[in-house]
Image (tube, rainbow, N blue to C red; front, side, top):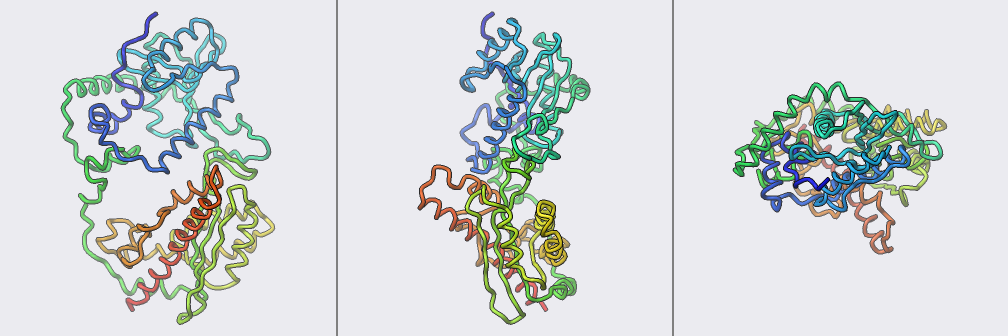
Length: 453
């Protein structure tokens, strides 16, 4: 057996073409125009890789057929065929190729002379793109001469709560998708033909930017196609300021006011007791306090030493800081309320105290979500990152070292990893500045709402 010729389509490029023909064309013929990868996206890719390696341990004794790099997949196809011929029972990163289409399967397992395929995903369920993905894999593998008894999406189990050592049998849930992928085979064949024909012409498809640029995943050529902003082509209409509704909202607030914001870190695989896949683990809060209408605003804050810090310290510091009365003003109440519910369940000793905090929550997002206050500059969004510059342009996240929650989560998670004391201090300072701006922004936004009446 000799190495197959270089493939025309891979599983990844097939999925690019499903999303947008232009994305596939640019990937193939003009990859230098790809957007710069953000640190958060890099971390997500790495976490997916880590989950895949962990899943392999659920199937012991496997042989790794992965290539040395992305340019040597034909060797991996050859190696996979040799392993199957020699009677291998478990193969990691098995690669197959049929009619110019390459597909790698995370884990192949042979039981009682029947093959079972497992595609590992770092999500907690089966999503539509995974089914299309698996359908292509099934097409390539079965046409390569391997009959599959079943094919599974092996995803994380969000019902699993870690206690002690990691239980891989509980952490991962296999969901059979074979019936679904069989029904998609005709469509897979026709789509492959369409993509191959498009690539043969070498003509850039004329496709405008739109919702498909972010569905099912954010395209990495948005900067090339439209300056990175789909918002530019949308019409957001006129300003709306409903003074009566805004005043009704303001009147619900009870002093003292506590403007509160949490920051959290997450990982696919639970690292501590009491954690489950993708649990949002609070590590920081900022709190601006105004005791009366005319009083000065004061500030308090908390930032854990590391991700290994005892969560109980966070809870006790929070309870001590928030007093016993007055509105707790947050932006997007569902987020803080959910974190409080999770903490209440973890620390039953403080159940009543945390419940009392939940009853005091007021959502500053409400007037913007309900379009009681809307400006075209908000570009159809009621996110604080859009509302703040529209209302108070002198306040901005642009000059901060850390400018969004995803970045804050990532840098805190990696805090203390091979970093000197000066770097750690710089990062901690940046985290405090970012979170503080979130709550200061709420103070200023509320002042703006009050000034309307």
